Amino acid sequence: MKRHFGIFSQYCIGVLFGLGLIISGMTNPRKILAFLDITGLWDPSLIFVMGGAVLVGLAGFYLAKKRTEAFFGGALHIPVRRDITKPLLIGSVIFGVGWGIAGFCPGPALVSLGGGQIKALVFVIAMLCGMFFCDKFFSAHKS
Image (tube, rainbow, N blue to C red; front, top):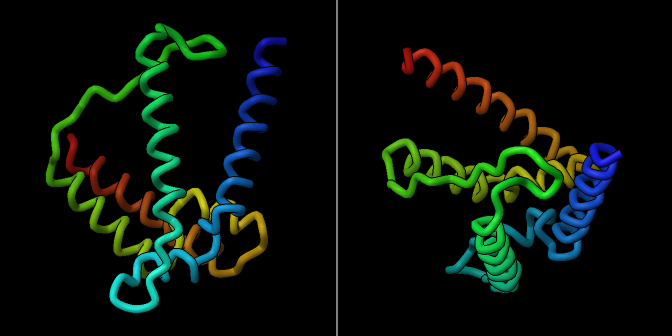
């Protein structure tokens, strides 16, 4: 029973997250591109969305540090690495460039895909291909 409640609550959290992305405009590539266009018709409204996300994230990590297991049981894995590495910087640049070109990042792209946006389908396919090739590239160099 606890497992089913966990799955249901995760589903509800996902729906809430998706609705938040839609309401805030994060699934609208034009709004994202207007936010990134600081030399043109800049739309600063997404600063509040991102600021709210940071505050929720900080609260979540604060509460998680006090726990020894996940809310529905199981191990709680909190990242411990804080170093800034070359792969982290390269990945951040690739993420930012992709966001600037497409107007999507992964979460909003998946929500937009569910809404039937063709541009989101192209983005998600490209994202999955990038993940596949990244995994192959780094797996080949790890051994």
